[in-house]
Picture (tube, rainbow, N blue to C red):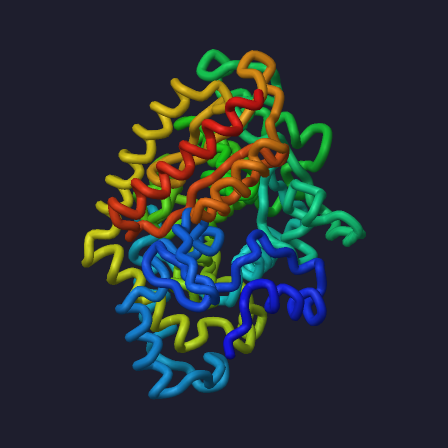
Length: 436
């Protein structure tokens, strides 16, 4: 007899540490497309996508088939010991698809945090410098280095120090809550230019290996820089010989209507990290960079036992086919247009929505108690998540102040599923709006 949600929760509480948090009490038995079904048969519309992992949808038939076919051949050999074609094919495709015209190389790993760790290793190796700069509101993982780079203390860093040395943090391009008290565009994108001043009081440019930035900050609340931001930052980096690492782990793989979100800003980064939706739910990450950089570390300096697992590579190749051959990128653009229109309309109706931001279908609502003071409504964001769940919709909150609701639904979501989910969201939003 299959256990129900309550029974499974009791077992979870007994056998799994509380530090491994759960965002909903539903235990999933199956999932397809944009619908998850729990062990008691209740359907949930998924606007969370496994935290940005299921861009091509749950259990996409082409991904499932690719995994099955590869599993019948072999599951693991370790690429270092007995290499295989799938790893090379995926690296080649990512090199060809990455922004810019420079020759590229790619190494594969398992998780987003592992990708960031390797990107930092490569940057330090190449530049022979120790310093790394990240941004306020940024999230890069939970390992020692990536936790250090991550901005938010609770829950990610609290009690887990000391942290890795030679890590520095600058304000992000959070225009809605400008750290410098400016207003875009009259500010002249001061947050980008401040990087040059940073080298005077915090870390010398000559000691800085890299700066790592998410094109759209995920856990940080979908903070989205203005159009000239990355060009300015890249110019400063080039002037000082600093590598620009773009963390596409949540924003990449079609989430913004482009395969890589940084394409919206039209620059070529030195290094790009991808993971999450790269392999349709299988654990896989990649570090793609200019070949002149990637080729420098010595043999044996990079890698890992499971990196570029054959099943994950097969899944990722299927994912790229779905995006490029099945029109999913176009579908992502259209979804983004629908969502933007709906949210603009909601913002006109509900005072609690202080800002709608993001690109494509990677959109978020920042909730405030007062639009003039911008007082954060973190408690109401939490309540909104609960109201939606009770009505059959899974959404996520985020942001440094816990007052942002983000959307990461599978891009394959049907019009009917989308309309139903948006109806639940708006109905619940109206309830919390009445409390401000």
